[in-house]
Length: 340
Image: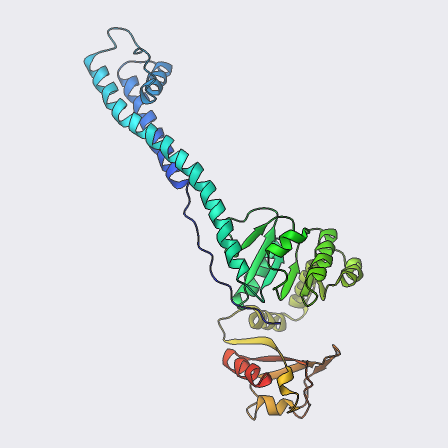
């Protein structure tokens, strides 16, 4: 299973920024107008009313008694007309632009995301953009995976191409490139929906690796019957991790750093041994070398059984998976030798 690095999605400018600026300008003009008319002798309501009809150019007669409508009154009104009308027209214009531009941006974003998805192959699809789905996307993208998200709600701030719709719909899964994907993670809130997504995805791509979320451990058999390769209960994993921190804090923190922290330069990874090694039938020492780097922690055989701390002379079968600990450079070199 090979996951490819995702490209960045171009971010659209916020079309409502200018609307907020325009409304702020209009609010300042209204406040200045009300204060000005109050200083010229109008009451609170009359000041607001006169400011509103001036700024909006409605054109009703001036508010106030004859002695209040002085030369200064009209000079102030004249200035308010120029500044207020300009602010009102600007705000109206940018609101229209924002409505049009927002719709255009939404359509453009959808088309760009779809074109990007159509070019992907061997990517990972996350069904469900909730907290679990976001955590999955963050982890796999850090490890070089190309990610496509499927959710019924638009994700304007997402850095991944997103298909908006029900993940239980075959047409939506096809738009996400299910036939070309390497992996699907069903991370919806409902077990019933996740089972349905698993069943649909397996029917659309027989070679797909499917990881499904469940909230109830008793539902696991149904997921496997539907075609899931792995079933995960986030609540159980969270409880196990808290228990590990309580009982073995140093070990749990070390594993967290190795699995999730990229700053120390050491990580745990898996390497599948391909058909290219069939003629050589290598042992672990043949692949790793004399320096024993990276360290082979375990071997998962083709029959899904594990061999922990395997001996150096253990012969590696085709289809076995090596669980290794080492630097990026050592792991990359071993992967190259295992598939040469």
